[in-house]
Image (cartoon, rainbow, N blue to C red):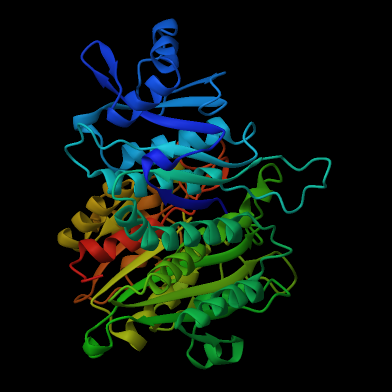
Length: 505
């Protein structure tokens, strides 16, 4: 992971220097610190800007050029933030990410980034520097452990020194954010690992790593789940040789409020989804290693809260299975009874995630009596059709909780869009021989009927939101702060939600 440090602006002596610049009217504004660098380099910054009219200092836009002045760096990278008065935390995350990307293959060792607080209205200089550091760390992430030395992508830059006034304040502000960034990368690793490495047992071990942070981890095996009547979850797992597990991760960061009901995060952890007897097409099936993206996000979120010592009480609950076809696998047409006594007609074994979540949601409510419950799942391809990759879809029985989640998403750029729940959609999953069926009617409203299914396992007095992350857990193209592949979507969202719900953390 990229090493981050903070220094006074005038102490930067690195061979490569990135400098934040802003738009001003029809020109580009250099802050006081940037002007000082420009003077030191004999006006090199001003000359480069004048010679490159296409550089408009838009958010994340870069202009990189070599310099020959012996008193300064060998290379300068100008990074745009748009209008200074409109710049916010996400602006500087994009700037930090753009800076490190511009230097990553040309700068060996440490690069530097100069953040000037001049003209900022929505954010302070130290907070801007901390946000730039966050963006740099997230964008620098790579997963290349399985590449041979010949194929391994080389990224020379190993660290970033950020120059900013009040650098000690910036360092303090970044400290908890660094824990969150590390947890996002932890979740990305879990999602990216192949299914022959990350199976249900390996996910259990990943969750157990949180114990060293003070998280209480408990694990239920197959026999324990059988005693609890979790036939919906176990039915999904029965076609695989890999045993299933249910894992709880409790973080009690507010021990003085131990009687306070916790927030529960629930994650779908299907470590590989072949579709079961309703076998998926072969093309693209390898992507189904990330069908445990919801569980990975929950592990990452609990890790983030524990690592930064958040003063809140939360519990993460994940159901871990592998969905495979075999002579033992459940069949279309089977009927199973869930742990809360409701019966389910299985019409498609590829609609398995909702079966896992049904029993896990019941268990989370029974065991922890949460004040609110949020579940995350790569649940439906219909969500990808509806929203693509930018937004995750949410469904909720509580307007306040949904609004808090939407606000949290905007703050960290993990955006969500609310869909309806309605009795007319609920009727679409009624079964003639059981309480419900596990799919709706054809291809109609697939994400909504899946959410209606889950809602039947939520107690009426519990605030609940379901997040379908089918389109946001994995990206085929890089974003401003994420390379191609696993995104870790949900870690920052849940961490921020805790804040939005009024926690002192």
